[in-house]
Image 1 (cartoon, rainbow, N blue to C red):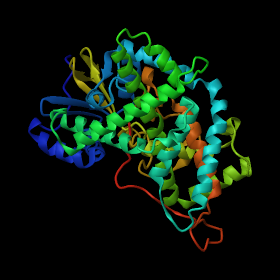
Image 2: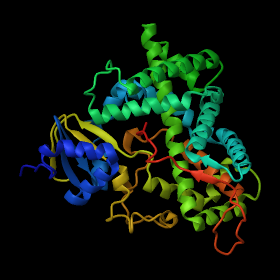
Image 3: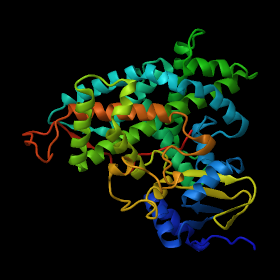
Image 4: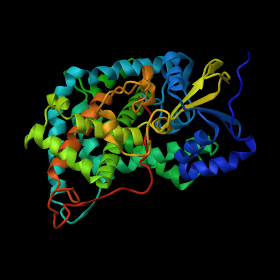
Amino acid sequence: MTAALAPGPPRRATLAVLAKMARNRLSVMSSMSAHYGDVVRLPLGPKTLNYFNHPDHAKHVLADHAANYVKGIGLTHARRALGDGLLTSDGELWRKQRKVIQPVFQAKRMARYAGVIAREAEDMAARLGSARGQTVDVRAEMTDLTLRVLGRVLLDADLSEFHTLGASFEAVQDQAMFEMMSLSAVPTWVPLGRQLRFRRARADLQRVVDQLVADGARADSDDVVSRLVESTRAETDPAVGRRRMRDELVTLLLAGHETTASTLSWAFHLLDRHPHVAAAVHDEVVGALGDRMPVFEDLHVLPYTSAVLQEVMRLYPPVWILPRQARESDVIGGYRVEAGADVLICPYTLHRHPAFWADPERFDPGRFMGDAAGRPTYAYIPFGAGPRYCVGNHLGMMEATFVLATVTRALKLTGVPGRAAVPEPMLTLRMRDGLPMTVSSW
């Protein structure tokens, strides 16, 4: 029997759907799955997106048949903004890049990185502790922290001197999202304000990369910069090597700090909304660590803190969408996918699937404290899955755990049942409007 095409809205609804996606793309994904089910065919102008929202579908696309699915819409458009770094590349180039980068994230290196992360976390806790009565932009704080950690542990560099990095990354991300939403229909030479900001940002990032390479490439070093310098020397054209170096370092800097900063921002936002959870984290950390800095081995004695972060990533996954394109025709969940078709796996909606998560909108770290038997593995994919599973996930989790534990231990808590009220809040954490921009898996 011939496989059927998936249900979905008619093509004449394209403009209405695009307008809704521009306002809130995640609500569109949620409403589509609620209305049409786990498989939706979504016509958008000249394109048709095939949206799959079941763990079996994620396993099929990302793992079992990963060779048939290359990077798709969004990431192919983001290439105009991010170049051919590890995030956007495919095929042999991606395998070569992954081979260069992966050894830096080996487990044996994690203990070496732990001390640097713990010290940065302690410094952040001290800074926040001195901000009594002030309002702190938690997103900006977490971005600064994760950039500093990334620079010290992977690049052997102090990124704090590059004061424009945050703004430049924001401009690049804004352009990448615009490219995705407009399907690259607007030429880059059109002098829109965002285009001009993007060009300035790319030039600034190139300046940073050039300085990192000049300062950091040493024959006796095994950091990322040195590894990339060595790998790009094989390029016969110096301009190609320079472009590869820029693309790979920019991608590393962006993906290496953005996902952890997003997770920590949402973690503190949710702890602020759920003071009993913050109290439980505080008590676990004090009981396990006392007042000393965490070390690598402490990751095994902070199960509730880890569960909090896992639940944060369930509700607000660092990878909100995984776009792919089918090389050859296929059948997924009984529905036909043509060769060249765009396929979407959305962790944001998959993590809220009511068939696999009871009361899915509720923040409940206890979900990750017990046995996960009965829940499909691919119902929870915050770091992607399959061959392109995030290479830096262990480093990111260690950083997030240490920061959450250290800051929560240091801050005075208000509204905690059974404790005397604190006369004056230690500080107010403020989230920027809207969802933090996230990027896909390496």
